[in-house]
Image 1 (spheres, rainbow, N blue to C red):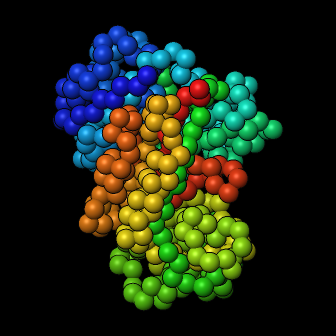
Image 2 (cartoon, rainbow, N blue to C red):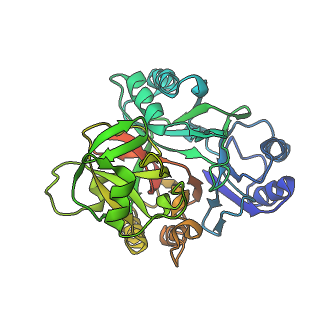
Image 3 (spheres, rainbow, N blue to C red):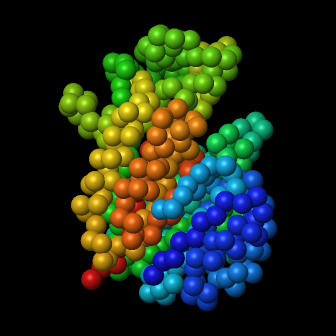
Length: 398
């Protein structure tokens, strides 16, 4: 049902040829493809069409990519999954216009999903994370997902996904929408009702502060925690100054986490929704989060990124997903991995993606990419998550 191709080469055509060598000719009915940002997307598209013909191509840029055999984030990787079974093909829906409004775009897409999806259908959502690079502005995943949820109305789906990047420096991002390469576009793959999903969310942060209230915030910019300058509070809690006048090192050290459910329940990493810190403004004493979905009065804790906990979370999540799946029914594992979890960014001695590659059953096709943000069902509904890895195993009902 699925064939995987993976290659790393500076020449896009050569990389695609290497990928195609592992996929039976003429079998592909749709390609799910992710490629490093050093490749020209038009060259990649041309090479894919040359090898596979006029099949729909969805996916996009990736800060890195992986499969069972290999993984990396040099910017030269290309990884693809070729869908060969017509009964398992998803409907492809693309909605442009995010530069005019992410929530409105999401709502239009959600309404289109509702029109074709069976109740509980698995939906893969992809969008380009970077709206512009100078000055940097992201397409907020929280606005996109809020819009999709509104557009769905009473329809229920299992929504997973991620934002695409060209590299770990947030330089750019784009998507393949089935017909070409696009910017400012959200794409949904709506799988047929016979496709089910087992999902594991991998975390890796621990609280290092008491609960604090956000007392001043404007969009994604947090100015005050408990009435004090947010940057000063975080520096004091961490016990060290955060290097650089703009605080660029902040996202490598800490996040802000909102605990779900009972705030006095014992610590459980899976109870937290964490928000990465994009940058800091020392003059204003503020920090800028990846998402603008916190508000005045949101109760948060400062969370330290813990590499040991991250690796343990991967091992635990892999064990859980392996117990959940039925091997003869599972046909694809998709790993959407926050780019910050790569060892080059996190400083971990072990690549956590390698634990995923080696921990999942070797006979289960695996495709993964490094993302800007991850989307997964959490606490009853789907929402964006930061500094997580999301494993989704697609299976066919008996």
